[in-house]
Length: 416
Image (cartoon, rainbow, N blue to C red):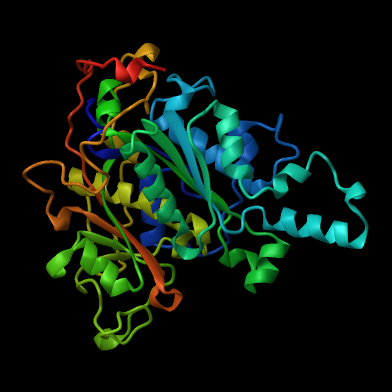
């Protein structure tokens, strides 16, 4: 029997957003939304170039940008390349988008109805596939692990993070890149009945990885994934994550969540109680980037990582619900330097070959659990949708050394 991956940690973060290129910048924009003219749309060509992307839809190009950034931040791709430095079968892809290629699907259907399938372009037709975003990320970087695409409503982003962690915990892969992306166009605006400036046009990505594998290659984790819950109501979800009314350090609320006096606001539980103590600071990421639909959960994780970095550095300055010191702060990459460490491709072979689980993604890391006040609570969905997903993120102890000793590998792990 081999050792399982242990904790599941986040080793990389990538953003493709206008006006926010780090988790700390996203956190600051969420705390103090910028007034005045909207930021210029994110330029995908500046990050991934134009060659080979002429016929890809915008959601796919945004996802490619965020994924590339996250994989480089995790030190899985060198700064001057695009191929992963570990075997491709050890990396999976989970993407979430409810509306990403809606325009392509609708325009394709309209063209067939009005004329015929003969008029369709063979170059653009693949974009009508529901899994086009996850597939192109895998093709671009040679990621040959499991490939999943989620379109699951308001909870889709957090669900994607959960399933990425589940793949790692089950031994199917050693790491997975999780992407949330949405864009706006005439079709999306018409469906939702909202203008473009109310909707997200961007993407976020994180790399989730078994702590053992991250330590073995000398990567430093930015956060550890805690428990994940999916319930019919917000109060029940929060209670399952934090029993006994324990107060988290911060709460990343569902999209446009609002509380009224004495717990009478939108999104409160069926008993009328506010699910999180009022003294806990609240953040609504969509106030900064627009309504995010299937990308929300991944964006929340990125912002929560920014909060964890500030909190651990002692620079967090919350003064109340929804308020945050807007002064200059060091970005996450500066506050959390990572040691690249030696890469040995041979030790990465066969990530999922007969690996037995010792610890799941929601298990406690050791005898001294992290206090709730140091954890970030993330929730997506609401009571009216009858589905709420919740996740805890907690800081990760600095367990990595510049040249860590490599864990011994069994025959089972090297069987592929």
